[in-house]
Amino acid sequence: MVEDYRAHVAQIEKHLEPWAFRSDGTDFFVDGTEVWRYYETQWGQLDTGSRLKNRTPLSIERDRILFSDEYRRLSDKYHVLYHRRGKTVRNYTTQVVRAAQIADSCGRALGLNSDLTSAIALGSKVGSASFIHRSKKVINTWLQQKLKDEDNRVPAGQRQAASESPADLRLFYGNRDELPLPGWLAGIDVSVVKELSRYLPWAAGDTQETPYASGKESYLLLCTDPFRRQALGKAFLPQTMYGVWRHSRSAGTQAFEHKSPLFPDKNAPGLNETHATHEASLVRFADDISWVIENINDANRAALDAGLGDAVYGELSKRLTSIDAPPQLRLAVADRDPGLLYTYFILDLVDSSRERLQAGFTAISDPSGELTIALSSEATRMLDALVEFLEDAVFTHNRRLEHRNTMLDVIATTCLDMIFEPSTGAGEYLIDQKQRTLRWSEPETEAVKALLDKPLHRIQLSVDLLASLSDREVLEFAGLEAL
Image (cartoon, rainbow, N blue to C red):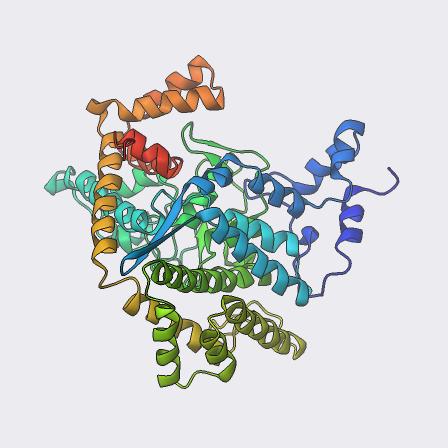
């Protein structure tokens, strides 16, 4: 081949706007491996070089996520929504694909890197535990209680709360001094925090973050083998994983840093706010827009199924009239047309973002933290109003949904307890399953089981194992397959 791979990639990405992220914007994978040395070696060989033709590192990462086992399992993780006597069910693959499509459409209109937006959107939910939103709450409560249990084992005379010892708060090597300890760790004894940094690779530096989030778990499952506590070499670009981890609109733009203790290279870039991209900002809005509209549409389908007609759109129409919503939005709701709802937000997202970019505001965010790629203030107000409507009119005051959520909370908590408690043998049973599917050698399997004796590792592993199970597998694991 005449040109080198880096030049080949530059040719593929030459159509992108100046504010888009290009593959040559980074030299290292998140684990510290040199990106271009790795790909140039492949490019120079006849068998592997042909696989790189017309593909960029980001398109390769998108495909690796798309064909991963973690992504496949999303098709067996379900979102169930009740409205009155009706019910709708959809798997989470549809949510992810629709968010990815919004991001791709908007990204192309703005001249952004569609491979990066697709990789972030497709990877953003692969760490979602079964029963998605209920599990989020259960896991966070369960994790914090288990950490308190470990903290309570520290003798009273030896206690030194982490919040009282700033010098001991560097959970990961290289953390900047100005980054605070996450709020959910405040007050935990220093000895537990130090042990925690070895076994729970959560973020330091963001006091708003919870112990578990789907983006964090997605990063962990895609970049590491948490069961063997090994980094997956040449995993992903940090820009991809930053976007995956912080794919929510609530993530913010504040200082942030994560470096996994599993990475062998102490100079690995890890993840921090310098890896933010316009593509990652775009996915945040695409994710929220699709979530809101799909929930409204699902709730209305449930109402239709219950013989209530377009009750949800009718209620929403009254709400939008009361808050003086723009005509386009009221028309979409009056026509019961989710496509028009999507069109309103997509056009606004493209137009408002393009206006800022063409005016020269090409930084990821302004000094106040407002993103450059974002909805207008009016459309943001409308999206927030739709979220509020869902909370008021759909997600609450529904007995069936409340009872189902109570049941799922019990199932998720029970499964976590079963995996964590050594006497049940459940964690070991799931590890044996992993050994067969991941083809571990006998010594590797024994090493994994030896790690189960570490309480903090077992806490994390319980979450990882739960996240790796589909809804059906969780029910079978809990002995409820007959349901």
